[in-house]
Length: 139
Length: 139
Length: 139
Image 1: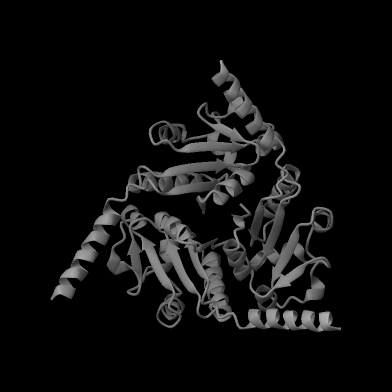
Image 2: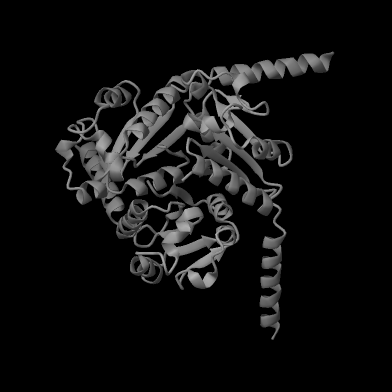
């Protein structure tokens, strides 16, 4: 009887713990390299769900290769969603400067709330070294 | 002479160690998000080879996004292979509940041996935090 | 005043530290599974930029699935670039023996500077266990 009570207590605590996980311990770096619209839409969905589930988790998205088109003012169809992620959800969004050089894209052509890093892949490597989990987004 | 003997001994032990690695120390989480048949086939091959090489390794596959079609009773063409992975090989297969909500898919529509998790990507993040290696499957 | 000076000193040291990072502490394993030419070109770009930024970093590329076509003497269009990566940059390039068996490809058909591993995915798992960062290359 005592054992059953104890088991129920543990189970309840465990489910409760999962429910109240606000994500504050979790750090995740997303890589985005795709130029196609379906993958862009899928990234938006991923981030929305992720921040709904874990509102306090630290998230960074690294855009490089053709992924850069999604964060160019003239090309993106997701400016509002991305702005809200950065300004309301605190998601950090960074663009690879190597990609910018290769594609001859200037900082002014990026959405104004984007930051840049010297090497997109280098950034992802550093985050993993610092204990962040890695997710390659896109289809 | 002694040195050569020692070197040969070490080499032999090392090759032997690799040969007898039954995988029991290895834990790997696979992410599957693709809806196309070739990627599905490639996932089946990956898992088959992996479990042949390391029969005792712990493996979990997380299906989300369009990856969910592969584990729906009405849509999959790999029901037998997946069932054998779960029941004979002990591979854990989980589906993202966010994806289910978005695509209006009910638990009854999934293959009966599938389990679910609140967030597919969250599950992959937690596994990485617990020391599991991450593989994004698909082409 | 002292505080400002101290802050400037710290900032300078930090920027300087980033500039002189030759990559020697970083270890990264790339996975390549794609058969399409654009993904192959993207891998070449990734590796070139990476080694320019971090010349002393340890890099290994694991080719499996359709990724193997890129390292077959008869099929590749990147033999020179790959050879230079291996011989000048010290990048290690390995092919999955399971893929070779499945596609009936012999060692002699691979570029002569390629090495092989029993399981491509197993190799990536082992590297992650040893603290290497993981990047899934390709689009």
